Image (cartoon, rainbow, N blue to C red):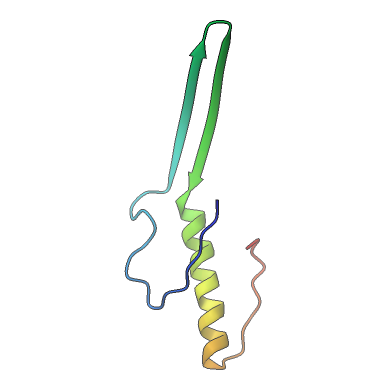
Length: 72
């Protein structure tokens, strides 16, 4: 699930002080056990958001925009 909304300047970061969240989901029923994992990387999300913001601001201000080599 990816959600991005441009805002400049940003008033707050995504999950300040938190690098990532690792979750484990367990469900047990007679004859069947289900375990799943989830990793939310907030640091990578912040990096992507900063890069998107930079490119949008540069495009709006008429400056030369350097394309990112990030997987956005």
